[in-house]
Image (cartoon, rainbow, N blue to C red; front, side, top):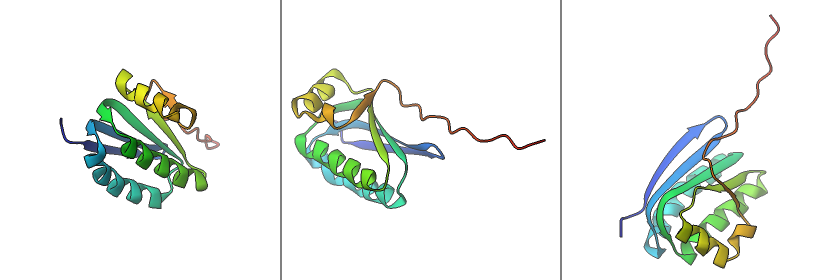
Length: 118
């Protein structure tokens, strides 16, 4: 399997975390390190792009659940985007499709700003 790769893109609207490769138990430590740093910043939205995640183990899913709960305590939201069928099936078997919001897009919502009077 391909080692887990984590790419993080930050903006004012939120954070996109692109995961690719193997989401097995060996990858959990590699995932938790950047998540703890992100959690400390208390973002309002984090979207995990799972399009290139080949597999996902229960411990890996557990790390995502823990991260989601921590963000929710601070009013943040976590979405999972574009999972491959086998990855989605793993989340469904674990009944985590009832915990996470799944989306077909990694686009962050545009934050409306008030126009300054001119």
